[in-house]
Image 1 (cartoon, helix red, strand yellow):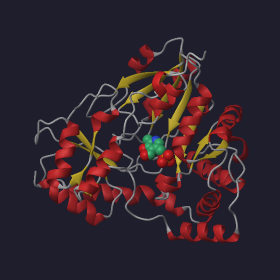
Image 2 (cartoon, protein in one colour; image 1 turned 60 degrees about the vertical axis):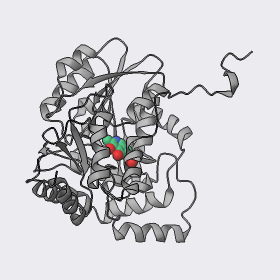
Image 3 (cartoon, protein in one colour; image 1 turned 180 degrees about the vertical axis):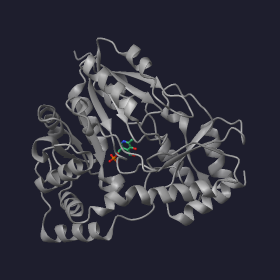
Length: 389
Ligand SMILES: Cc1ncc(COP(=O)(O)O)c(C=O)c1O
């Protein structure tokens, strides 16, 4: 008899604690109450005309069958060229770059590639929501380290104390969603020491790599030789080219790690949407200015929102990258952040994301996240409503 068979046709959930995501919930509520939706992290503006024309051309010309599993060679090479120019690295497109169906797939595949049952993976809360379930599906153990508001800096001695003989990997995310912080040189030095001392692997989620403000530098793991040797560096074109719905991203790793990554990738999606790969390759080779101008584009939006909120009673936290700004509402309300966000949407017509949902412990600091990847008018209108509180 199969002892795994459940009684009464009840399926035993592999993710018993996962429900509908707060992003879907808040967007649903925003639609229902016709609120301005600054909750979910997607741009309100379209992908560049150049990319739209290119993808249409490729579809019309019949580029509609499977791409090679690691990606179209022209895209792998275009990614390597951009990365090598930006980070002074020596990435090889064909042996180190794998194109994936969004960063979400890349994260999932990197985690399945590394994690065996019982392995521990350190993540920092507040954390992007896909890390934990992916680790648990691999029968790994998530070790949460809680970062403290309002700085959200990493205490590296706490990280060191959390490392055991079972620790397999550390996941970092810079620039960081939801807090908008970026890692500094001292963080990378500490990280590198721990990774090498304990033979760990690094998964570096860098989906906002081109959105860093105030002339600061994005410290990609690919800039550092010792770190790069043990790293899976993951990014997303959705964030860079305002096409989150295309779900196109990539993973860069050393050749021997890439080989293992590709074994898993081929059984998850095999390959990603071919015409989009060709269109993005053209954009990167013929129109790469977009990438280099992205930080300035979003910095202006950040500043519009910050200026428009100056007269509000919210306390604004510093946003150094990404397209998110955190607001502390403790001078306005005693509600828990989830209740506050529901109230804000229903009563004041602005949807935001409560920060506690990114904390495994549910810890609440009375902070909410706004997405400023929106048209200027939308940001100003939302700020006017927030200033009335
Ligand atoms: C930190 C972070 N990692 C990964 C992803 C997933 O990216 P993609 O849409 O390309 O799967 C997101 C998307 O919001 C994100 O914010």
